[in-house]
Image (cartoon, helix red, strand yellow):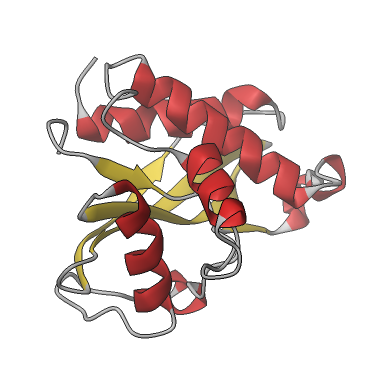
Length: 176
C-alpha cells in the first residue's frame, strides 16, 4: 500500500460509553475527530506517505469545493460499516457513489475509510481508543480489508490517546 496513491477519508463517527466520565470533555465531536485526522496525517507523513497519499483535511476541502456534485466527506453514508463487515463485500449506494466521486477527484483507486473511533473502558480507570478502518477498492466497489487499530491505554482523555491510535494505524501501513 505504501507505494500506491491512497485516499484516507476523515474519521466518520465517535462512539464512547461514559463510564470514564470523558464524554463531557468532548464538547465538539467534529473538532475532536478533525484533530484525529490531523494526527493520522502527521503519523503517515512522518513515514514518507505525505506526497502520494491524500488525507482527511484535503479530502474534506475537495468535497466542499465540489459540493454541488459531492457529499461532505465528513458525513458519508457509512453507518452500516460500524457493524460486522467482511472483506469482498460489495459497497452499496449511496456510499459507493460517494467514495467513487471523492476518490476520482484525486485519481486514486483505493481508499481507507476510518469508520469509527470507539473509546472503551478497560478497567482500573484506563480507557483505550479503537479505530475501525475499512479499505475500499473504488473501481470494483468492494471492501478489500477491515480491521481495528487499538491505541495505548490511558488514564485521561488527552491528545496522546488519539495520537497512539494514529501511530498504530501508521504502523500497519509502514513500519517505523
